[in-house]
Image (cartoon, rainbow, N blue to C red):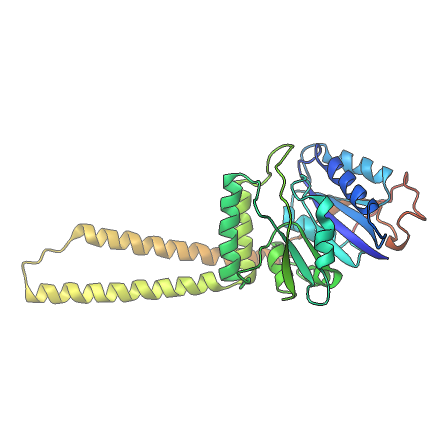
Length: 331
């Protein structure tokens, strides 16, 4: 029997996480052949609502559930990385805490894994996100394709399943700015998509703000590619070439026709354009240098404040007293 580890980052989901857990349990209980056992690693990303109390209560009632409580809000991707450090299964699955990624279709992902596929992402025929989230996903898709070399046919979603070694490879990344999609696809090229229905949000609203999405894109830009720096070099070269040609033409025209006026407006426009471009490129360099500096200072990727039900995965429900919780600090 294989063990499936399900990692769920939790943030502002006290109204939805119970339904997600109940559906996971129902899905595994309804297997035609009991080929899979499961554990659920719930990672509280310092949520401001009461989700921590809810998931601790669930862990006290169900021996399949493990709880990680992060010391502060590190973001969804860092929370997933924290979960990867506590999984024990042969297969690792990641899904959202809001119920939009349907747990009852988890075996569509699991069954696709095999000799020719080590990593499978959900693909949604129609995403039930807001226009803002869909626009962010579109920009993210372009970024992944251009900067990370993602295959055009592959859709990267937060609902995925992978073999254990893929998650283990992702754990080798120790810097404080993880980008899960990039970490996973650089580990293997045996990837695929399966069609999954995407549900409408029932409770609350998305925790992703403009600032968080921008931060996520910057993680992808700076963690896995130097292409933005190369683009900056090419733009600087193009501006220099343009300035040389334009200056040469201006001098020649003045020599041939002394009545040609010298344009103040055109000079100011050129200065503003080149100055803005220089500041933009300096800001990009500063972003890279700042992240390098923070990484050198060993800023933590995540900090686990507390845990519950972290036990021997081989005896999930045989030897664990489900009323008991075990608390220890991360090594």
